[in-house]
Image 1: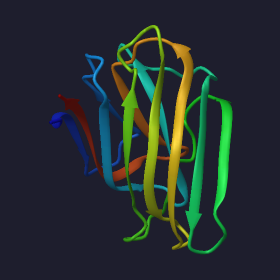
Image 2: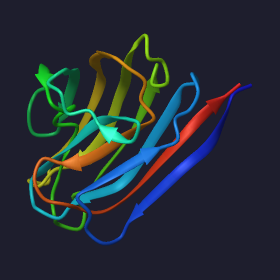
Image 3: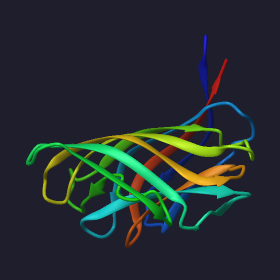
Image 4: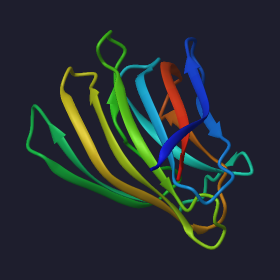
Length: 170
């Protein structure tokens, strides 16, 4: 039976520009859970980058595809490639209830011969008060080992939230 072993947790209680979770040191699948994440600036979307030796990879090699479900509009599919980060995971606002939560499974992060990939599952109450959910996946089109993952907003700081990295152990 598999179990989750906590690797690290970062709790944001005063504004920071980004959150980096490190400690990926095996070929196991890892999981990031984040909750109650809120931007310091209204109407900002959460982004992700992979860390190689603790440094964010900022090359234009990220790609993603997600299905977006919203209360105010029909579902749609969003995708992009050639980006410097995995963009637009969810959008939060500065009002009390405008937070986001999600889970990402991380695959091949410690393997320098494979592309690192993540699954994307999240939900949020946007800055317009709309409820939305996203699911899909993303990858970095570069074969390199990654020891962590970084979260940040397109503009402004992370005002609050809890980010935890777990290792799935057999």
